[in-house]
Image (cartoon, rainbow, N blue to C red; front, side):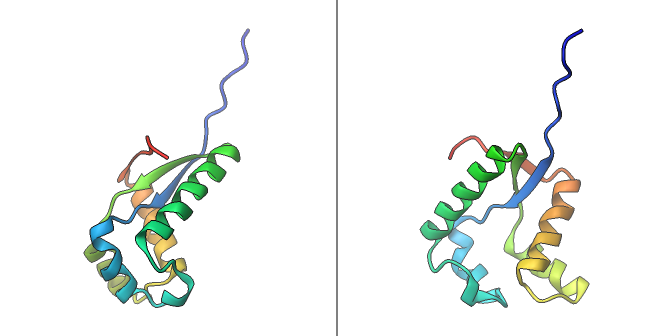
Length: 104
């Protein structure tokens, strides 16, 4: 009998689009904790993906629009901060609104 392949835990990670970055920053309640530029954020995103893979999880891009994020926060009466975004990304991951991360 061969060893069973262990299934990796899927972790959704929010993926911002370059064209949405400035609007996202303007809407974020925790702006001072975020990267100033999209390129700086992209470096952080890539590092997070590498770290997740090293830890044995399977990171996937969460697909969303800024309007969806803001609507979620409004409906849940949340500020647009890291905690709310994490909840939002987790919900979208459970709904399967993700895609494979093919480039790093």
